[in-house]
Image (tube, rainbow, N blue to C red):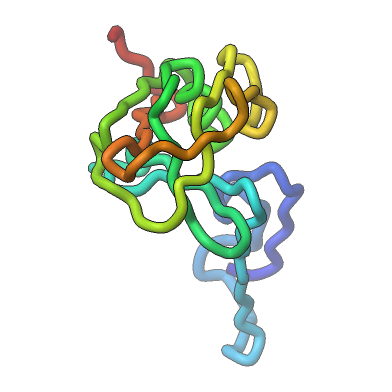
Length: 151
């Protein structure tokens, strides 16, 4: 790729304008790279069979941790999926359905109404009380963009 120009709302590099596949006048000294970093509150899905399902993990203070499944429901799952760029509907899973995580259990008793754009906008019932084990890690199954199914 050569002469790449992105607006900033593209989901993939090939959605940016560029000169054309295999049309370039570049040498390897002009190779470009990207370093991605995650800020506190970043989310990822781990342990699923696809990119749109798994145990929910939250990034905090330089490490990934999990969410306790106390009060975990489809509204909470919808917010996680929306924050990750997926569409509704979303399904919540409890009991470490996607395997037990490691690290700190960072959130518990999350109370989303399902309209929030980010998990940080949701309430926590009675604050955070960590009486959870990793056997209670929360999970989600999101709907990939453009795919809807009858549940």
